[in-house]
Image (cartoon, rainbow over the protein chains, first blue to last red):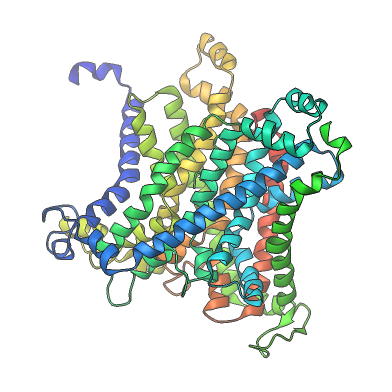
Length: 279
Length: 295
């Protein structure tokens, strides 16, 4: 080090230190919840988070065997999967129509979609709650699936449009000349060509649904519980057991990290790279 | 175009999405608008509506709590946006000039972006927990008086800011980094040959060309902070008092804690207008500045 100091300008050293600090700041919270999830409440009280006490899987045993996290995770998974299929199929159809037509309807629809993809969900959740109560859809799997689909659909459509645009028109025109109907063209020519777009938007809408807390909180919660709600339920007025809570948090994070990396890898190669929030 | 001779079958493609939007966006918004214009308090439980005009809005605007939540939303948005733009820009420039040796470092840096809002909120609630959170543990070990951040109105606000910066600056960073990597290097190389220092290149060449990207990043971040609900709700519940009750939390509190459905709907509508206005200007700007790529 001492031999190299002349090469380091003070600025560079400052930036290196800043980068390191930022890195620690970014990693520490994740490290802390993993560490906490592996300790018993007693060793947490006695030794604290950062030292001693040994590791154990008892928190994970607790949340799955003694509490309902397993079935709530299943709910979350069912809702996210159904949302994914519904949002991607309706979004793909819509994106195809919007990129292939030139009517006035198209312009208005595109504008509406672009805006609704950025609307704050909180503003929609209360009106949706009232509609769901009228239709008796509240506190049901179907209700949450529909709500998540509605939330995801504008985003999925918007993500798929550049992919649809990138499909060479000549291919579709050739198929049309051969006498294919427009539906045949869509299913046999266009869809296979936008496969990576479909994968990205599917991952994306799965994650959006998996991560949702607000809609589950307002539109469900007693009969149908999703895992994020259960996790928040670990907070009690009588002192919270942070061990199981952190274990649950790690379980929820696992699929998110796995899928996000896939998503991120895909996203950096697509037209919208960076313009889309990963989660 | 291929659709010109089959305009009827276009409906096959449009109907599912259109139905979704009518049923789950247009209808609820209409319902919300109606409710915001009706008296709900004296008719609790009954389906009957009494039209009262703008009374709910008037009552809302007369409430100090509403103005407080608006003020908090504005300060939260400006503070986080400013901080995250700064960090995002500096890190993007740093990584642009010094590719880190290990790519894993870059991944670890943006990792929090993928954390679920509910997990992020609960994690920071735990970290700042007064009794046995890691933060007070560190204070304890250093021999300092542990402070309870989330029980103090002033610090609770900064705690939610820290949480947001932790999770959201990578989002801003990715947009800026993308714009940075898309820039042509010609200008930079010319400036370098003319003897410009790195700082001069950044200030006079890179930043002016990066302006559209920065505006887009800023706009998207602002819409994101307007959406922020879950992480703050699970972290502080809007408290202590109403020191972290941003507009989004205010809506939910008003509706489900105080059962002021009329006023809550009115604030929903206001929030919706605010969000739509922002979204409109962001998308308009994005369309105008196509030169920065497909952002």
